Image 1 (tube, helix red, strand yellow):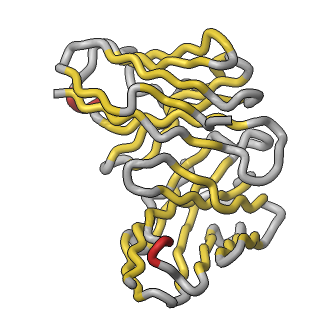
Image 2 (cartoon, chains in turn brown, green; image 1 turned 90 degrees about the horizontal axis):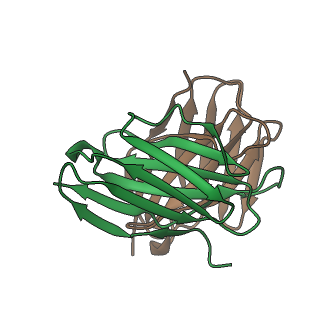
Length: 114
Length: 115
């Protein structure tokens, strides 16, 4: 059974720091991996999607990497800002074509202090 | 498009009552998902539909839960009878088959409290 783990559960950093969030999964037979952001009281917003054949994806100050063989992904946030404060979740999909049948980690709650 | 729309946003109900949550997916999306989020278990997939047909309901916790999608623009998740342990945030999401990039869109959730 696929399990997704995120470490740390919570993180507090001063504004401007570069930071890394970690995600690991137990079964390397994934179709893709996604990183989401969730603000308090809100739904999830997809940030980056990495197909199983890809090694990384970038969007602005965000960079996500994927090492399928070791079952790991990282989300790198450069020059963090208070507006980055949110919970970040990673999720894996094990079905081709259907990117919505996802198994989620428990998330990392990030606080960026001004 | 206004995104995935869920109603009600918040509901407080008494144990034993019937609860109906509603979802309007993004127009043109052919997949619809119902997820539940709790502190203890995180986000879990309950059921998903493809072209209005239920494909996988293995995440539905009990027979008290049922979901329907009578047409491409509407879905319901019903709990009857409700129990305190059903208290959670229920998310509806939709996506489009085969499109690349960030294709799944979540609604803002229905916050259910059963007392």
